[in-house]
Image 1 (tube, rainbow, N blue to C red):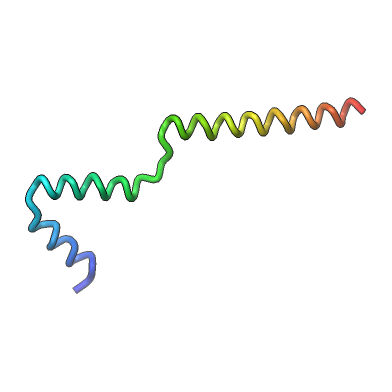
Image 2: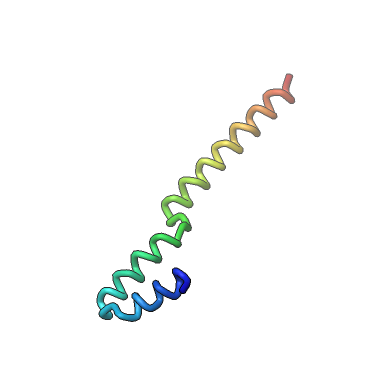
Length: 63
């Protein structure tokens, strides 16, 4: 029997409250999308890096 089948059988035997707790935990394990704050931090960091590159380019071009 495969591990997945064993897990499915074991989950099927859990009480509803424990199934829900397991589902919530499992979702945190597979949900690797950044939240809004993390996305804003990533976007801000990218914008700062782009600003630095543009400033450096403009400085070189002005020489």
